[in-house]
Image (tube, rainbow, N blue to C red):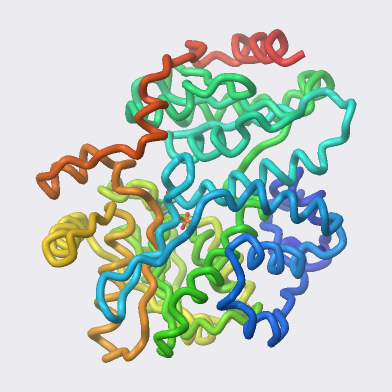
Amino acid sequence: MELYSTNNPHLRATFREALFQGLPPDNGLYMPAQIPRMPEKFLKQLPELPFDEIAYAIALALIGDEIAPDALKEIIQQTITFPAPVVLLDNTTGVLELFHGPSLAFKDFGARFMAQVMAHFNPEGERDLVILVATSGDTGGAVAAGFYQTPGIRVVILYPSGKVSPLQEKQLTALGKNIAAIEVDGTFDDCQALVKRAFLDEMLREKLRLSSANSINIARLLPQIFYYWEAYKQVQHFKRPVIFSVPSGNFGNLTAGLIAQQMGLPAYHFIAATNINDTVPAYLAQGRFEPKPSVRTLSNAMDVGNPSNFARMLHLYGSTWNIMRTHVSGFAFDDAQTRAAMRKVYAAHQYVLDPHTAIGYLAWKTYQEQSNSEAFGIVLGTAHPAKFQEDVSEILQTEIPLPPALTQLMDKPKRAIFMPAHYESFREWLLSACP
Ligand SMILES: *Cc1c(COP(=O)(O)O)cnc(C)c1O
């Protein structure tokens, strides 16, 4: 697999290089140099293929000979360990539930795949690879679960004390083994600053093999392509055009769908669904990309004012607004509309939407009405409602039970190293804890 930087098409990297670098040296984003088209035969077979075989075929087409077929098969087997069912709400609407993994959000797919490929490329007999992650809550949980018990890799997660939910804190601190949690007496920005300084610390880097699990790493994007095919498989018998509505923040998930379409997935259209952080819907409407500071909302995993994957989206369409608009429509909704949609769907279908998925639902229904669409809409269910238990149970006035695996996690003790937001303390701890 060959990748290029969105800042310079001549700057190339292999998959392995892009995986460990995260970002190209010129601060662009890595994009596949070629997007392979899946053969007709694959589309014909699709209805009979299980999810892991679909994922393997897509991964093989993308990654090519950089990973041996047997090893790739094993990586996929370790990644696709939970299903992605499309649950029907009505005759023309389904929710693609991407939240049956350990952290209850779609980010589990990306984190698991990344852990597996890193372990695959990690040379044997070397010192452990140390992954540093600063988190405001969400990403850290997926990374912790994804890398848990991966041989040769340690994960050090920094989170701001008192600023993550009780469930998020348990996801970061209760696993143990190769996952260490540092509870920083400070803000998320302090956590991020500590991680940045460690990466710039040459002396430290001579002693430790450091890497990151950044959300813009291409290895987190690729596995998100798999489930668009898996979803299409489940609804193609309706014989309607298929439209994907994607609740979006940094737009990694939507970008993966657009790549799937260029690989030959018969997706008719895409919907970029956001909360009031509407930079991309505004771009689609007016042709101007104007990043702005993010605003806090109920769907807080989508509170992004300057979406990092927008550069990738542009590259898919030769940076042409008119072309992007033929593939993607944008809609934005506020918290009051989100709450109303959650109540309406619960009353009509006894189905509980989390606030993020609710925005995808609203966007699909708005599009369907405005364009009199005959299509089947697949709303990406990005999080389990139990992940936002307090908000959801208050909005719907009903108890939202935790899945059993998480109840078990909640009963485990919290293990975290409490630390001031002070680089020397962090550095000293790293050197003593990571031999
Ligand atoms: C991360 C996240 C999103 C946004 O996904 P992007 O790929 O950043 O657009 C949406 N919903 C939930 C629940 C998330 O955790």
